[in-house]
Length: 147
Image 1 (spheres, rainbow, N blue to C red):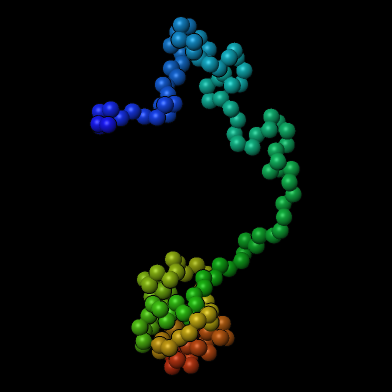
Image 2: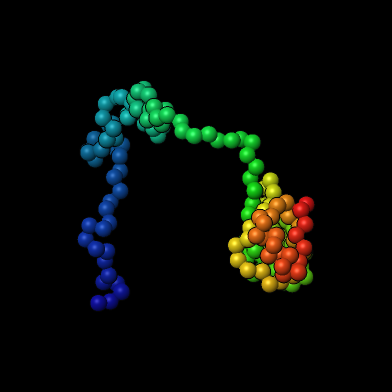
């Protein structure tokens, strides 16, 4: 077999349906849309979820729960992340955490959680700490300051 002898598998390639090209084409006149009606018009069809005027499913189902629009969004960082990303003696604050790629933004505050081990002496300045995280930072010889 040579390169010029290669052909696509049978049935894998179809000709494009050329609509509206005269009555002899078999797709002329109404171009496969039938006569009149919503589906024959330009911009046909309805928006997703439309049920012909019947109350749509997403409006028939009851709402559940409560969404507190005043809730504060706190970003969390684990002690193990601090161990991995910072050198001993470093100052860890919002800007340093963003630069290290641990968080994307400060949002409404940053809280350090106590998951993992910490052996480096770090000066951490964030909004909140869990008790375990504060104990681990201070046990390693660092400072846990609340900003």
